[in-house]
Image 1 (cartoon, rainbow, N blue to C red):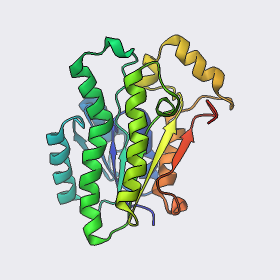
Image 2 (image 1 turned 180 degrees about the vertical axis):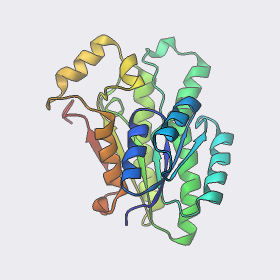
Image 3 (image 1 turned 90 degrees about the vertical axis):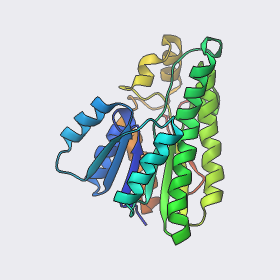
Length: 243
């Protein structure tokens, strides 16, 4: 069954913003959260009058995640979809990280999805309600990254997906999207030039990967067209690094 009310983290920009538009076009109610208050406001202005609830949340904070889910479950108890899209990529080698920055990257990319998924499942599973979770990983989590910490956390997202697919079965489907180089995003702007060129050289399909194209894959995984998929990884990478 297709979901009707979806949480999208990292909703203010990139894939998250494109997905909010796509889901609203599909007739869904969307709860979009982000740490970028200005970006959320401009998104809300763009879709004024449509069923979008925006909230400023730092997904690296356990307290913020719990407070956010408290508000969501009170105001949208019908929620049945979660997209863990928020991510943080700094594009630097591991020796340039200090401990505090490492902890933040791990919290945004791994712990936030853990905390939110746990609360989401804890709401649906006791009532045996159906739902879907979509996580956003990266080609970096499959083949490595010049930013070793980012490659590590995105590999962790893939592992979290497979494990929660088992934990939350048979009621909640959990799948992961693994994009390649998505243009027009903050991450693409930070990728070192040599790595950017390598990604483009490896792509087997022509044309850039746009946020809207990745949003299409996410929307598919939230729909009943993917009813047989759980624990699956779908790539949106133009065939980059065949694997």
